Length: 318
Length: 262
Image (tube, rainbow over the protein chains, first blue to last red):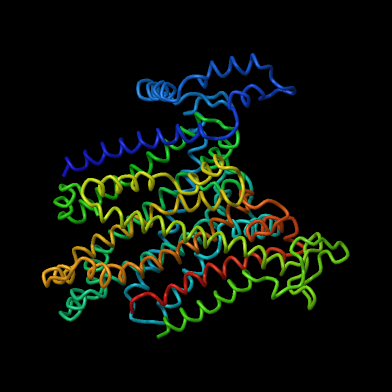
């Protein structure tokens, strides 16, 4: 079992390597000369060609792509150094670290709230024999999913921040700043999550062995919690953990509307400014999060269902 | 029973919206970008069904032409991503062995890059505009669908009735035509529908933030952004495009209920 997890970790590292290559090649396909952009920064007039040439040489843009990548990788692996932002001149790691906590907190709080809302609702809709109740929960979930995050955010700002002056609309300094962004994100997300949970539970609860458990006279609560919920946790946790990954890699829509300095917005700003080192750093970070989540999912499978050990041993997870 | 009624009703309503946006000329006599200062900020009335905006443009007309952009590009995204996914899954399952393994790994790698951020990066590489937005969103969506389809084909191939069919001497052509294709078609249509609904949300979100359509051309997300300064005094300018998005996404999702096994 440990062997399998170790293999997953190695595979995850390999994925990260591939992502770093893809990121490296992609950012260099962007239109615009980064050396010219750097040279013209904080200048009123056009930078002289000698300066542009010097910067191009200094940053290594004049060398071949393979050579540039080798240098970058060497520094990342041996010094843990992701380079410096070409826009702010600060280390990439410091830039990411200063915008990460806000995004992480927003993502985790939203995820927690979404779970609190959608788990009971999804479970209830999945096991109930009451068709009307099921229909109500599902309709609510579909409507929640259909409201775009940005629209809800704009309406919430208008109502609670502009009209009632109850909550702040911009920034992320205090707990009160989190209320509106979390609300806007959780409504949409909980709609989707409730559906996923309901469908997974419903699928299991219609299986013959559940019918048999009921017929045998087992207590309702026991059938639901042990025989239905446990096997349904597989598809549910897979779907949810991928959402968690999306959340903690920065919701740049919310971060833009509420003027947060989060990781999503940092990436958008860096793309606009052709800030190569930051873009590479962020893609590496988000790739790392997703690789970690994949390993988590696989480990969870191993834990919940020992037969997967055998399947994964043959190198196939699906 | 309820399921069938809800599904059929949603599909019919969705068809009406699609038709209205495909042929806006049948429903309105105005031009989407025609400026008329004399009639700016009219409340919804009999001449202007949904009122006019700050430049006196007819909101209903802009909503129809905007829907053409939003819905049209979502259809292209949905079609493109499910088509690539289906071909990928078919080729992967057909080749099998090491190729199957390799293609699965490529999908896995693509899946661990966050979709919207990857799309933004792609847009900045291509020239900015609606076409790049559509291409980028189709590219980031297909790996997820490919993984689901590949899994479905894989479990179909090992299903008992297929093993039985093989044992009875059914030819591969027969198995593919009678068992694989009918089973996978439902899933492809479902994925297409889900992809269409999420496409509308993604397109309008990115247009709202200014990636995508260029002014003055209408698009639902861009219209909501344009209505922000007037939310207090002219809320209908945001309510109508907002409702358009919500209703279309909702109907697309509810239509899929027709396909669910009862």
